[in-house]
Image (cartoon, rainbow, N blue to C red; front, side, top):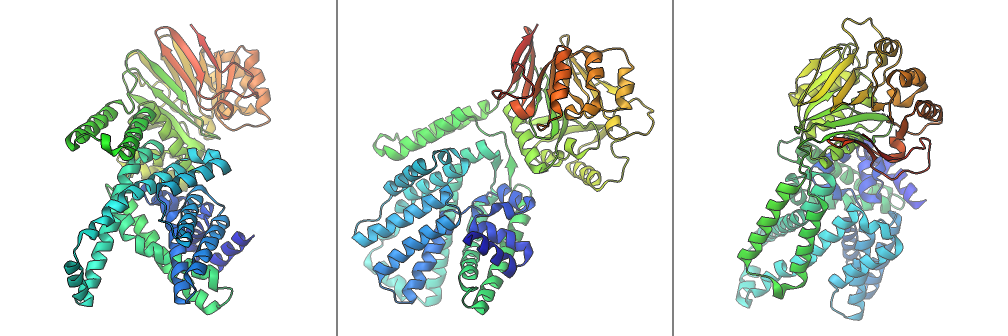
Length: 608
């Protein structure tokens, strides 16, 4: 309830353009942040600014401690107050793992001060890990939690060595430093502060890079600079934001002043990150290292940190690091070669995307979209392609002009080099704003658009891909009736991809000679309007993949295909579906274990 009240207060005091960002950084309400802003933070490596973490908790505790000193509160009472209010803030922000970890560190530091003990180091971090393990074991396996513990552990190791260098100054050097003019002292302190921030940023960036590459498929050089120059604006925004929450109730004019400062600093923060995300070279999308490589890297790093006496000479350490990086570059994702043909039906919710990886290494993507959240669709499709070893898409074929079949393409154009985009003659006929934006994204990426229709072929090294619909010319019809339908054949096995085909386009297709196939993508996500009985009789599929969400009407569709002898797989139940063709035959495999559901078929199987 208090969290909701604070959220309402931020929305009433700040400009609405920044209220969502303020709610995210102060209260952990990231769901109030728009997708474009969230994506910019992620791409620039500054997403940690949005998560309630050690930065937020540390700034709050530091500000509170400083305020209590100004009020001449006795140190023991001030220490207890800092610990208590830090716990309260963690609970207010839903006690997420990074906040819990930071809170435990603050509480243990306060306890050490009260009992006159040395400040705890790695033991406090281990205690935080144990608490998280007891309260919410699954959180330790989340990427955010792992990055949080990793960054703090790296800093705990670094800071004593880095800041201990000043202890070597003799008394004369310290005296000379104190006798300098105040302006010179301020300059030296400012430069030293920036140097320390830069070192912290570099160390955390390097240590977390393999995990970020593996989980987010990103390298963000911009973070090295942004995390330094944005520290002060972020600290001011947090301080002012806490002022809004604390003083708006008691001293409204002071709360309004804090809101003005918070709004201005958040505006500077947001505009800087947005501009940086658009700069060439600010971030790169990468496949990311496999798990075995990452475990090797962090395992070696842990041993290097924990057992210093067994460290080899520096040249051997650098050589081993270089060799491991070289192994990773070769083995990150080895693409398929030889005689293996793979067709992967991706699970994208209510939408469609099919990745065809040919034996020659070329990749063809048939559709790329989902009903909502295009950026999420881009991430899902990109991750699946990288898992298959794909770093370039040679061709994208868009079946028709429905957003749930193309709206993830702009995000993919940012992540992959694309050879060409193939569309039907009717794709861009309507002046729809979403289609205009799509065409602009394609133009910006410099990818050619090529028009294809029935009779055109995209053959590659023994794999035949023929367009069987729509013919040219073709009378004006709905988008679904105009779908590009692909007939794919390799080593005698056949796959039919009909998009959202419906009448009159479907009627036209069914009037052609029957085309038996091994695998069928059910048209229009298994809709009853796609004439399942007629299509099943026409192509007699052994396997039917329905790409979409679960709906009650799918029961009739699956029953129809089963009566014709087909096994049905729903991506909503089994995740993605792999169709692999090798010399020993065709194999269909669901990527997730099947729950009891509508399809009712064995999720794996072979047909020779």
